[in-house]
Amino acid sequence: MIKVHHLNSSRSHRVLWLLEELEIPYEIVSYKRDATTRLAPPNLKDIHPLGKSPVITDGDLVVAESGAIIEYLTKVHGKGRLWPADKSPQWVEHAHWMHFSEGSAMLPFMLSLYVRMLGEGGAALQPRIESEITNHLSYMEGALAGRQFFTGDQLSAADIHLSFVLEGANASGRLADYPRLKDFISRMHERPAYKRAIAKGGPIELTRR
Image (tube, rainbow, N blue to C red; front, side):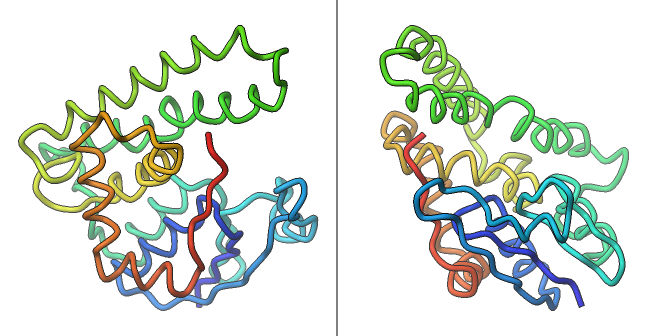
């Protein structure tokens, strides 16, 4: 049985969503953030040395990092569903969005969160950070022109992987000027599998980024 070591209001929500879309049985092992620091509890390090979520266990196998977990689950347990076949027309585009999510898009949101903690000390950095957020959201908005999902007309693992970026942007009110992205995240929220994931894992309550 796959176990999802699930931290509230974290990237592991999208792992639950993926499992619900693929209809793969799983068990949730819940962890709670510290109410003051918002950090994960120390006992997550008992599962993986980084002490971060998401992380899954599948028997004796431990898999960390969202992208690796998503690829493992779709290819090993999902029989390739939601993941384009190698050398298919969508493969390169799908690979791009999978890497873009954490490699490019998430970084300025995280920088914004931490720089704001510095108060006036970080004020000089904020314009550059905001310009990068605008750059990435504008790019994603343009990519959805004429299509329902990021790789075409069907949901893919990349859409699920990108969702946490958009959840953060939506929570901070940044999607007001991006109607396609706002429509995308609204449609994802209406998917039965997404609703089941939220019902089991709890709501996504993000700090403004």
